[in-house]
Image 1 (cartoon, helix red, strand yellow):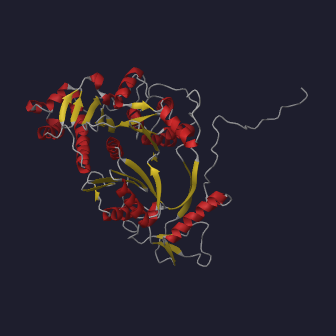
Image 2 (image 1 turned 90 degrees about the horizontal axis):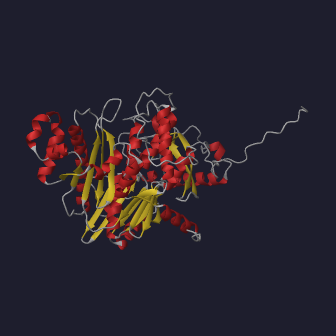
Image 3 (image 1 turned 90 degrees about the vertical axis):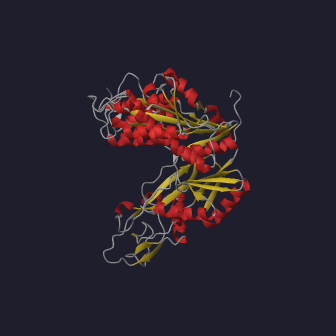
Length: 550
């Protein structure tokens, strides 16, 4: 009545606080920050030291690629700031095939290979070393002629119209990973290693009693073996050739925490999950006990409003990378990935349910334990005609090396099957192919299995079909898969056996399950809750003693 109004309060606190350091989107904002100025100076010094380019007048019909500065805050596994990183990146999307690039390749080791090497290291009590190559792509020489514009903010005032003729590979170029891999491969082969036939990013050294393995994931390297002196000499020789940073024992690799335990190793991505929940504002969400609902089927057209496809794809892409240590979400991620071209509100609600499940199981991960009995066991299963849109089936397998899960997959079959036996047999063929690949990899690594690899299926028709050729006349439409599996069985490469449905571990990757069923299968796969391990590791990293009630 007296025209007295309470002043509006500005929000000084929020439920989801902003990070301490914000990455600048452009160079004009980074100039004012001393940390970013120092990071740019280090990057430019490295470029000059490697002789990355030479300033030349632009030739006729020259189409130089652009470049930009990218700024990132590198953090440790506990979330604290490790360093400020500035990277000069070329706009590789301006390149043309056959003109300024020809060969492309990404030196990325397969996830199954990583888990197999870690399992072997645990079984033999070997040490694991982690290495990082500084400015890795700058070590690769270019065979093509590539011109680039001068870096923003660092143009030569005496030659403002000149362009950079690149001598070395630079981040962003399409051929940069291939050039770096060629340089690294030549160096490692010079040390006596052999390139694996099963995985091109794995290098193997076997001479007399010395065994050593080298894993390559872009500029991250992992080395393990039975002789620490030999490993030290390899690291020293590699450091003489490349700018190397020895990060000590393997502890944080590809967003995955590798934590030593009394019985082996514990693999978790709890920091990655926490960052994902923070980015989606789901840290305060209510928790659930299963990744998908068993009563709400997912289909393409569900009569609900559409959802932002860009945001949906970003979240699903992040979830796909999370399956590195979480086979229990493989089916959910595979199912949600089928709607990325046209997501709806129902699909987004299901995605949020999966994020709530991750919040409830944020400390869960895989436990790799040591054991003497080296065997290869594969569980194969299929959800026959489970897709409501086109009635295709979802096939899945999970492969164990001893009791350690090393490979898994949940994938939609390309064809519509006319019977459950046909669907199970096609899934059996996919699982058999992966099992044979892992068997060949183990043979390359110099490890022999104690028994023939076992392939377990809960469908009697598919099990009998792999042994009995009488059913050929009724299965002519799947002859390729049929002959492939039967040939492996006859050669003794694999052994197909029947397993009860209650013990079918691949069920976790083929359909939505109840809470009780998930808990039962999770205990068998050893998807352990490592909250006490991770919290103890974080307390040790900060130098804090355990609380009295821990």
